[in-house]
Length: 250
Image: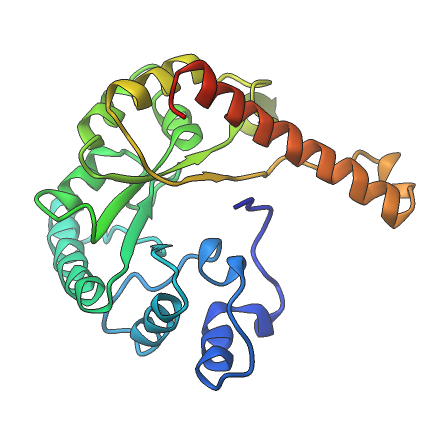
């Protein structure tokens, strides 16, 4: 799937969608469980409802929301509590028949350092709860060491998130600049080599987060803008397909 933003319309929120699905008003579409992160806590009243609805319609994998560190309690104590939530959610996944995935995201939330994802998922069955390994965010946090983190998580990886970026500088501060695949600084040769060597056969999710249109293109007709957007997404998809062939992954 391509992730270009989060729904701003509450009616498109997965919790509302789940209620509609349960009532039989519509079938789920790819966005219902493929983009918006779902429950990170099995005790959330909506979590079981959403996951059951997803599983009933054949959706096998979902992405969790993010956990925060409680710095007053400390990093390790926070991880102990989060681990308990993961264990409960894993039990729910088993009962429902669905796999969760936790995406590593740059910043200060749980998962940014990547080693903490390994702590969360240690000895947890990957078919029930997994790492959604995001190579762009891994490179953002560990320019060279990200490959070590990928090795650490190799037995926990249940899906791959792919996007590219470069660094910009604004007011003397580094800023992530999202770009089309192959135009940034993510080492995709090393990444796909690792995927091959680790024998990872998992879903790939394409996240399209760079601007689709420049200022001049924004003035074009809707049809013209759609053609430009589709062509850019197709280019990213072809980049992935070409690398899957190049590294004999298909």
